[in-house]
Amino acid sequence: MTRKIYNVKDLGPGDGGKGGVVQKIAQMTHAHTIVKVGGAQGSHGVCTSAGERFAFSQWGCGTFEGARTHLSDLIVISPEGLLNEADALRYQCGIHNPFDLLTVDQQALCATPYHGIASRLKEMARGSNPRGTIGTGVGEAYRALQQFPDLAIYARDLSRADLRDLLIAVRKQIIQDLIPVLQGNFLPEDQAEVNKESDLLYDEDFLNFIVRRFSEVSKKARIVDHEFLGREILSQDGVVVVESSHGILTDHFAGFHPHTSAIRTLPCFTQAMLEEAGYRGKIVNIGVTRAYQIRHGAGPMPTADPTMTETLLPGSHKKENRYQGKVRVGPLDLVLLRYAINVCGGPTAFDGLAVTWFDQIRTNRVWHLCNHYHGADDQRYFTPTGELRVRRGDDEAQLVYQEALGQQLLRCTPEIETQAIYEDATREQLYKQCADTLNKRLGTPVHLVSFGQTEQDKVCE
Image (cartoon, rainbow, N blue to C red; front, side):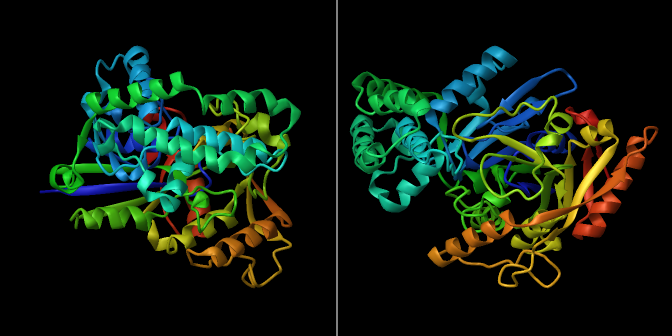
């Protein structure tokens, strides 16, 4: 039997273009299953040559290719979001019953609407000093699990007779947690939203609505035992694609605190899940990056350049919002890319790179890159050659270090170099230019370059 797993990871803070890469791999390999890890807040855009278009959150980006989706125990799910996404797939895309394509590990943690309220209120309480959050409650649910494990709601609990009591207990704890938050000051423009969100915490009709919706998921979704992944999915002949919702630079202990996720995003955690499930076959690790730098939300981004927004972002589906913050773009930051790769174990940790949005570089006829910073002099945080030092740990000292490293990045100035993109260059020539440049600077081979939104626009080695 031939079995292979593609493990697709974003090498930035997110928004690298994983959706199109996953769809291309699924189409090219006839993948039978997409295994999801991370959180339900992802929005992975897919556009096919057949004209299908959708932003996936909990269903995998191989859905249009006929691949099934498995929500693993490494994803924090949103039951309410599952129902909304299923309706969108049904009415917008003509997929009659999306739940027929889905299985859910019974140990998948659930984010409730109350976690979402807490996330949004805490972000508004930060006023003009945002941390950045998508606001769906994924991080809140994960942090609550660490503090109050008895209050965690898992997929297996959605059919429990005492589900309402469980949700009431979650709500009570969140209300208690928010007392000092709500006693603080908020920006005047946020006050109406603060009042609306806090009122929902005490709204019994809202509670009853959540209970009904969660119970509905227990009836519609196929919730399976934890061994299902290894027994039914990984044992099959063919290809599985692991799709993550986060970027390496949002890893809780490797990103730049506090502008990170509550969860871990490094490939080793996915690999541990696969090993635990008994998989011993081939794993192909693919790192994804746009051809330019992008960050949706707060956090260090040395190459951010507001003057490049119009030339780099036309056609993007990314929208600014109060909680996640502004979308920033700039020259591709090879220093941060090398850091992300090194955090994962170095250039050999990835079998190949997928570079997206090179069509925008082609349109602009110029490619801006940063290979070095000015001001990267403090050797507590930088190597003598100006690379970010990798410190490993999972404690408070690690967070202190990562926050200080982020502050160092804010003081750095990027040294920008420019490559011309010739008007008459073919896709193959541009592929070679991209691959040669990044292979030399990163030490990991480029295996895919995207020149457009559909699978036909992606050139593979």
